[in-house]
Image (cartoon, rainbow, N blue to C red; front, side, top):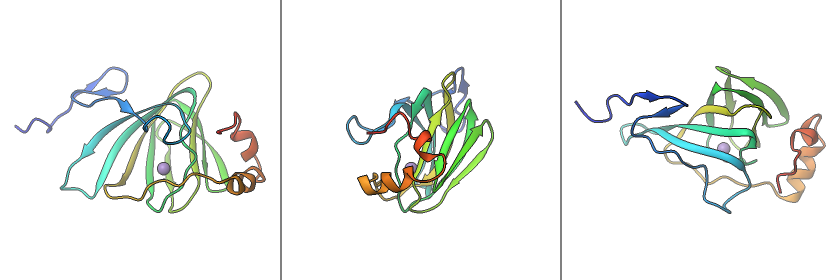
Length: 152
Ligand code: MN
């Protein structure tokens, strides 16, 4: 049997043989309290499946890129901004992030938010919002409040 045929689930949303890695390199982009586990990454697929976990009150980077995300919430609850809308999300909800669409996930104050995220194996680097982009986002209903505390 190939070693990766079965990776047993471990307590706490971990998987045997899968490292818990930093979300991004320090200083690469603003975020708070996020880890990354790469669950499937095989040349046989054009995609990767990752598990991200955002600690209570934490948030992922506000970013956009040409590649898309297919997200399934696995644990906890929180909110996400996708495009010009803020959504409440909880376990087993599905979120689609289209190309070049601003997005950010934020965990609820009292529990982590964990989700699966499928992406193209080959993908462009995320773009960060310029001051003008942030100003436009904050003018949308509910978005200024969503973006507090300030992301930069
Ligand atoms: Mn992204």
